[in-house]
Image 1 (cartoon, one colour):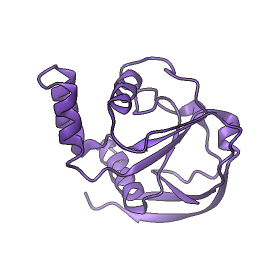
Image 2 (cartoon, helix red, strand yellow):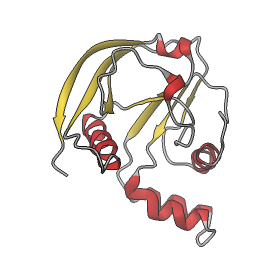
Image 3 (spheres, helix red, strand yellow):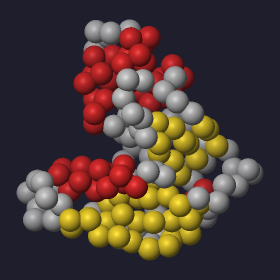
Image 4 (tube, one colour):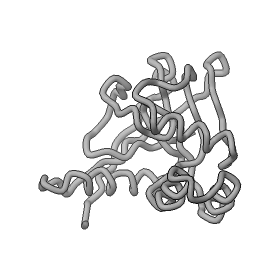
Amino acid sequence: MKIYHGSTVIVREPDIEILNFKTDFGKGFYTTSDYEQAKRWVEIKIGRLKESNIKLGYINVYEYVENEKLKILNFGEATEEWLDFVFANRFSNKLYHTYDIVKGPVANDNLYGTLKLYERKLIDKESTLKRLKAYKLVNQISFHTEKSLKQLKYIGTEEVKYNG
């Protein structure tokens, strides 16, 4: 399967040690099978670097072969368990789980308002999930261990110009 990683740098050899904990599935190397989502990640990452003059990002392309010996958690859709898992990871300062790979929907910036309402306990879990399912949820595949990264083979990189 071909997967993509959007970044401000070319990533030939993914490394989980330099990454942020406060993400949907915890500290890991994040990819997607959706090219447009990878492109959005490039734009988001460049947009966060407002003081820089970076106008070029990269979609790093990999071949991924699943290894059934690895510990893999797969959320096929936005469920109550997925929501609990995302919140536990976003608010933890350490790795919340012991999975090698986690797959599931992206709690992207379009969903931020709904997640904030839930976080502040202004809407319940059922209402949150109902709202989330109204969005087109794209996938993400995150790699959390060195042995999981061995399932990736770097194919190449495509440049993305930032117009923001």
